[in-house]
Amino acid sequence: MSVDIETVKRVARLARIAVDEEEATRMTGELNAILGFVEQLGEVDVTDVEPMTSVIPISMKKRQDEVTDGGKAADIVANAPASEENFFVVPKVVE
Image (cartoon, rainbow, N blue to C red; front, side, top):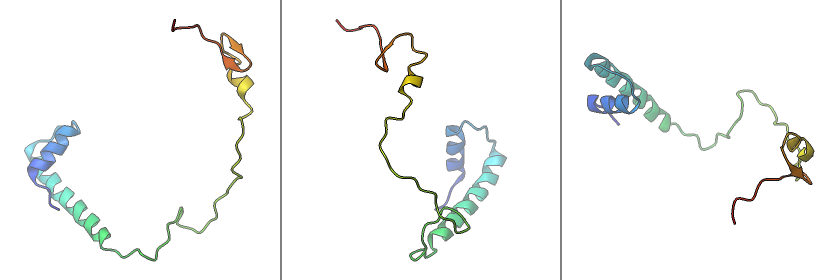
């Protein structure tokens, strides 16, 4: 993929960045170099590489997946102007 000067100007306008002709010409070369590097990364064979979360091998801390009510219902409605049985009480808006 190659980026021309018109594409650079369009992207700059969409990003609301003021770019003059000289900067647009310089950015064209820089963006083409970046896209060339990304294309090189696409050629790398990663079929046997496992996904990792860190550069050093560590085990993730896991917790039990349990459904709870949170235990904070009373704290949540503590500052409410009106509440009843841990629910917010609001005025009726539909007749």
